Image (cartoon, rainbow, N blue to C red):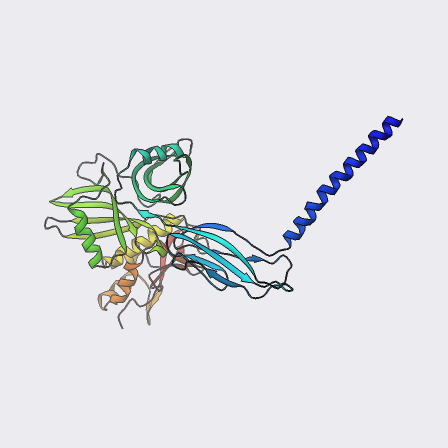
Length: 411
């Protein structure tokens, strides 16, 4: 009996001690939780992107928050804690305020690393990039990815590449197209995974490799030395917002070379890729034809159930037709009747007659053809093509149709 009492007493003491030690840290933790905290203490941000920092007051009353960036050239911060990445580098965002009852100000800090995707000077695949693509896609059973060119890289946060691939989905009737995938590796080049950045599914199928006289996929993605400076000069002169980075296909016709070129949009705020038909004739004069932006799987469900690829292909068709003054194609895409300025147009014949007897405003053509179609705006009215809504489109009977024009006819 005595032994049992001693054991019971020892257990009670042990329990008491354990409770004493467990209660103390909990009280301290609760006290710590009551201090205001930032929702993030470190963040990696791509150039041009934004993130919002917030102070969790944890029940405390605090004064107005003063936000500050230690290096504004890297990232700025607004009076509401919105951080915008400006350039590659590191900065610290601080939030200063005074807690009611405290004598000193509280300053909370968040470390921000800004990284940037940089266009590769040499797009030809290296063995390491090939191995990277193989390493991250081998176990994916939904599709196969055959790397063609490396378009850009980001080496600040791990080793990351945007690689152009020929993609073939594993289906009963497979069709190949092109994808740009983001390949993620650690600093030690161990595979992490991949995501599809953009694709041409529903817009452009992969080129054949042995079509006699046709456009065929090339073996080397580097733009030919003779053609590149001509194309660059043409783009600069005509202020076309795309930069050629790789060649996908080539066709030779009557001394002229026609290329299918992967182009990158220059403006960081509208980063994107497109396929452009570029021809260089026998006199070494380049011209740019149709431009088809890669689809970014945007959601246009606010106005249509059609896929992003279908919507963006229709928008690109409109843009290319306007660029060529191909008003017959535009006439066939209009949802009649339609108001154009003060004129009511009931069918395609009336539209063509109106265009034939009027002057199309140069500002209208410039606005529509300058629009990338990569970053289309959409709301309940439809999809906007043009810088300021020069053309609106919406779905009718499963097809994208033009529903309005603004500023088409020169006044």
